[in-house]
Image 1 (cartoon, rainbow, N blue to C red):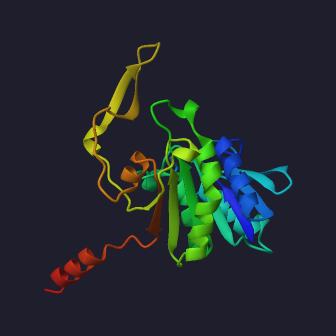
Image 2: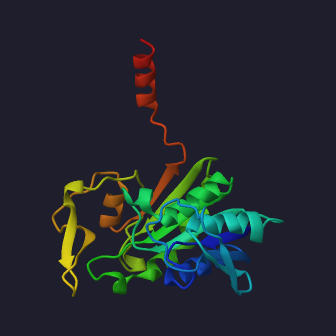
Length: 254
């Protein structure tokens, strides 16, 4: 099996090294094509007005000056054009990608691009807690990654579907199982603007979530992570809402 590994945190990210190690447990034919720099939050963007710069880092490892979606396209259509990958693995992201995160995440977008190109694709992310990014427990994803990926592949991924996997913020032995979960929804009332002033007196702003108690919905990816379970969420490329489609069709037919 040929595996293409990518991410949105950049070619030097520890999560990419973690995923590469997981991929090599599955196959001896692993290729890495990742962004030259951190591309977190770029979603499914493409570099349409700038050239893509390709740099070979080492054997079967490449860096692209572009987005995660650019990396998948370059990997499939250029670097591996003569023998495309059988599987795209994106991550392991530094921080969870659950709920609304999936609409912003470059990690998810890379898996979306793989799916668009007709390749089975899985996005993987490692949650972190109050300790921040400095306390990321990469061993959780490292120990459980192969088993989760193998089960997903054994079960099968239908065309037009990608799979979003999130590992909880705990040691590998503390994982409380695997939850096949729906995409959750945060309380957007907690979304805040952190206004500050720089040394010259000019204002600048950070997007942030206010700290407050929030109870995630049952059966959601948010709930699974909170309960120290690995969340597995299938996502569709087709964003059409069928009930509303039917309702609008009836309304406009009048």
